[in-house]
Image 1: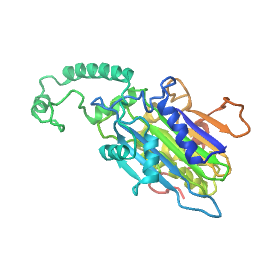
Image 2 (image 1 turned 90 degrees about the horizontal axis):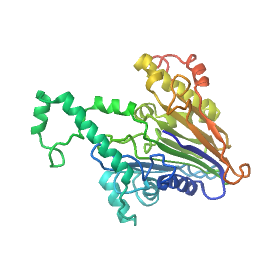
Image 3 (image 1 turned 45 degrees about the horizontal axis):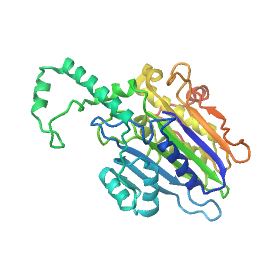
Image 4 (image 1 turned 45 degrees about the vertical axis):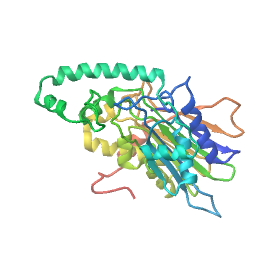
Length: 356
């Protein structure tokens, strides 16, 4: 899961910049991050997008509450972040899901779109073929298999080989590299901060699965009195710790963005080690990015020499600052694991000493 970015002191409003930046990745067919068009479908071959956008509200002295819009398991749309923006601006609700989210999009001028690219369709067909062979080899003529053939499918059609167990899903997650999240933090010249995310989620996930990206507090959080954060990586683990909210709250208590990110990753690492022991460095893949209202940046991850992702020892993070970057030049920062290792040794076990 790659592509987390931060823009500091943009001339347009931060919320407009956040939407435009994420939408550009969703529509990009060349440098594809498996976000938006080009992402991979669920286990039934259907695209379901997750996206969210959060306005941190007006800064002091005229602070207004933050706002949020999110869509989950959104079908037949390419730009989840733009539909999420419409939910934030034009709906009394914060979050819409599935067919309801699509109905809302169509009612607000978004056309039906074929979000499954030819390349993704071909990849899905190959995955389905391999899964059928695997299931036939593993389950052929077993009582469970025989019983499953007689059960009606929940869509009214014959059961398909796309249905698989939770255990198999977890294995698929660890084996698959082709899924990403784009997360973007923007701070404008008026001190207003915003965050946005988008993803097509796990490849071949269970239909209806929702990741951390569109969930406030997990995939993103923004408050113009303090700062904002976005997370990327293993969504189920991010959700269990409300990672983005934790980072912003640590900043509210006085931590720098970097220390807040390192603390959150250390807490996540501790939780995982207590639950999974030695499996941590082989499996957990999480990164978090923070931006304060003063323009300070923090970034940290679980990656490192013992836990690379796609051959990298860290998540890539692009940073742009107004007046400091030549046109088209975006320096790259990398979230590392060494600082959060140091912090880990100072944390008491979670059951007896939760963080302040």
